[in-house]
Image 1: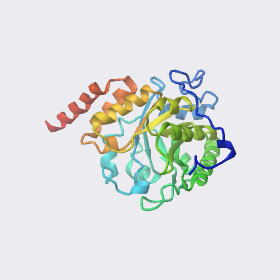
Image 2 (image 1 turned 180 degrees about the vertical axis):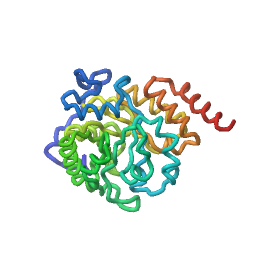
Image 3 (image 1 turned 45 degrees about the vertical axis):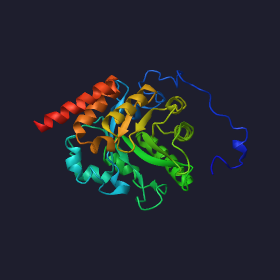
Image 4 (image 1 turned 135 degrees about the vertical axis):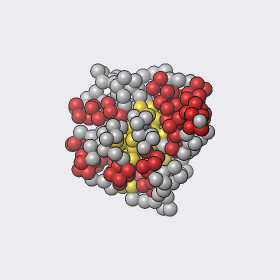
Length: 300
């Protein structure tokens, strides 16, 4: 196991001190932490993803088909995206879906999934960079997303791919979203998620996507770039709203939700409710009424 090996760097290893209530980093004159040094093009694209008026974002993740195929809720992409795209601050998807299923008139910025190379039937950590940066430029994307796996069999492969993508992204002014994951034998807890998120930031990622966990402040406060919370598995709507509320309260700049929106029985109501929590700090018990009212209006 990764942490059990007798390696020089692990001998005498100490846990990070508690930073609850502390500050991660200085924003300077830019609204996104860790990005004040970037040039205009990078800042402009990040500002499209993370809104300047609130410093928050609600990303809609609909890239699941790159390894799951036509999963529930994403069978016909045009039908899923048409009612939701106008409410999302950002769409995260693949180039195939962008070209075939999204109108060029859609104003939501795009974070393009650029890693893959395996399916749900095989080892999920076996990904690599599989989209040329030149294609991302042609598609006018606001960001590029790549999965990195820490403590998994193909850790080295995914981290090298991330490094190459960061170099290529900086060369053309496109920011990088690192999607963190950990090995199957490793718990999704603050220790390992903070490790993964910090590695991504140290390598040069501009935004990090990771899961919510207990002691989430440890993850957000030890990462010098913005954290967006992954939505994860489908939850009851009130629980998903509570998770989003807690994540933002504990330092995330927003969420990148998929199944908790497009698999809801009222996706539009759910994304409206999530936006009220993220951007306006609405309490979950009040935000759920937005979802319920939208659901009722569809039955009239």
